[in-house]
Length: 166
Image (cartoon, rainbow, N blue to C red; front, top):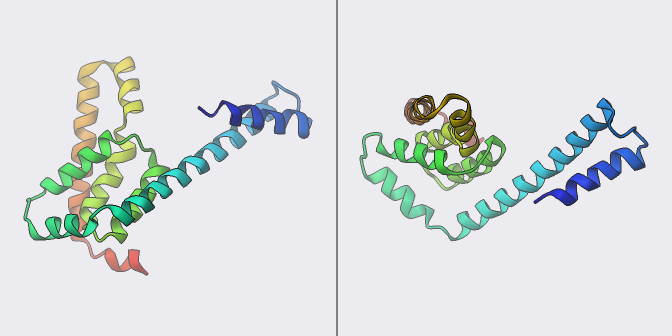
């Protein structure tokens, strides 16, 4: 997907800066430039998508539902599951978290998503299956989801909204 970006970073490092191709410094700089630009592009796209979601998604109804209904921690579990199935790393989860906070979603629920999203993702699960098998992967996934659920419940009880809105 980003092959053009990799060749552009190689061109910048090896040809423009004149660093020897295959050297440790050249490879490190090429990798750094490629990854920084790729992450910035992905962060921009996620921020743009969250802006559209915040503009058109009925966050008020979701907020009213979560504040009105007493789901007894189920909302944290659902947020953790949502975090586990979304293919976001931590740098992509932060704009979503900020959008949820600005939308008025309860902090505990947003923290459940934020904890679980980078912790339990498809890449980590695929690596765990390859290295450790299904049983350990299942234990990892369940533990990560429960950690996000209970972490969000604990953080939701703390008076943190004043810190986030300043």
